[in-house]
Image 1 (cartoon, rainbow, N blue to C red):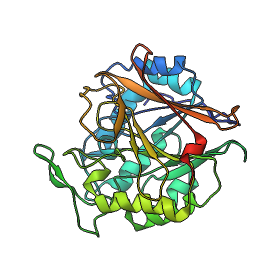
Image 2 (spheres, one colour; image 1 turned 90 degrees about the horizontal axis):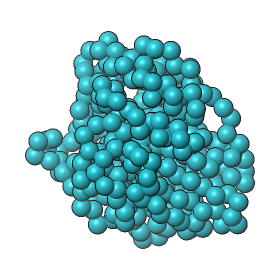
Image 3 (cartoon, rainbow, N blue to C red; image 1 turned 120 degrees about the vertical axis):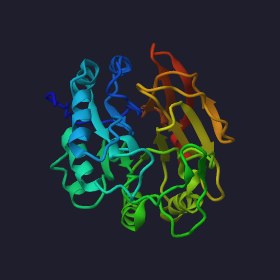
Image 4 (tube, one colour; image 1 turned 90 degrees about the vertical axis):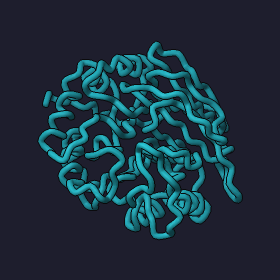
Length: 325
């Protein structure tokens, strides 16, 4: 494991957030240098931050060590603040959920790697879900990072033949404790709420992993936003090895956007068909960027997806007033 001197700077007004997922530690990660060139104040790792699938925690930790020694990663952590959640390949095993037996050991490796082993919030409960706050009352950004592995019910179907929706009302993505915590978070004051989800949220079941595999949980999220009357919610996601922006308008809700950025360094897929998709990026490595212009009376929020050369292949803007009841 190489030294990791994470940048820990206060961010009085958060306006440039980069994000990405699916980063194979055995491959070059030149795209992280392009992330640095865009000068984000914060970078969010949304899962599959390494590919360490193993039932041996020593091997899992060794794979994190490979990432730590990459010059591109060292460049990133020395220039911008980093926060992270996990997905299956850094959690421990492909497509695994609450059936993975080494979840607590994996959690401690994850927190240690990202310099959060003393994070009292994360250490105080099972799983790695947590939240961060940036700015003051006039521009307060709440970043909520979910854990969609520790508590998740096993999937129906198979990786080879596709997964099917689970209509059992007791099946869960997040577990009762995390749902209760999220309700409390959404009742706190914030101008903009960014929910980091390792799986795509705005999609139907399509055979891959997504919230669409648990339709009652997906609807529960919509209902929770309604119940808490939480303004300013949007989702950032990863996992699926392509980039897209989706938009859903559900009854009694403002439009819910979900911007997916993946992969940073792994094989890339063609964007899948999705009736909620409003933009997508070409096949290839990519990362996402959320830009917020607080100087406008009605702040503008711009979703961007950049390719390996730093070209914006998705560029879509909304105003904060559009994300309100």
